[in-house]
Length: 274
Image 1: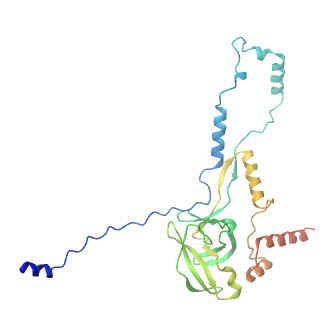
Image 2: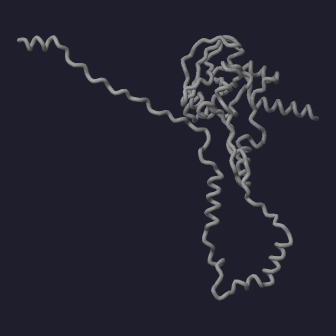
């Protein structure tokens, strides 16, 4: 009877605590390839230099090594080579920019966007100067209308220098450093063009340029690829100019376009230098 009463009073032991599961590591997404093109070029050159000579290039055992040297054609060829310097172009590597410029986190070096996505450089953030970035245009990108390698916070109302806005702070997904914010909504009509765009602090980000060694034929191929991507011209990507009145009017009206701005600047240049 006593044992039955004890069983009813004493509660059962609690279950053992579950082991804390650590979140899986997050690996950043890279905008540029990790292996440079000249590396593969050098491997091809080294493999071709170590190739076995053809059967016709190997001298026969019945011929003397001095036969070809003492021939008249051979002597004339040697004299011609000694009389004039060689004008053949050698495949000497040159320092060139083989990839587009990118914007990275200054703390951990994680890629955030291409520099061609810059819309304006005249913004002000928490830590000084800032830049306005448009979302990627590639519809196949996994991040969708957001930048890669970022973590977006909760939307909140904030009074900025240009009026009330709804913004969300953004952090680097790798090191969790605050790098700016995203515009979710704007109360005033002239500020509606900012919706969906991002502000990146220049104190928390850095511009990255890739310089590599490449031979002449690879440089020509890279330049051809750049011309094809830009529609056949050698101009730099068109960005918003805060000193241009026409650009400011179009931007405030929400109709600013890079192609239209480029055409307008070409017309101004022609009128100025007629």
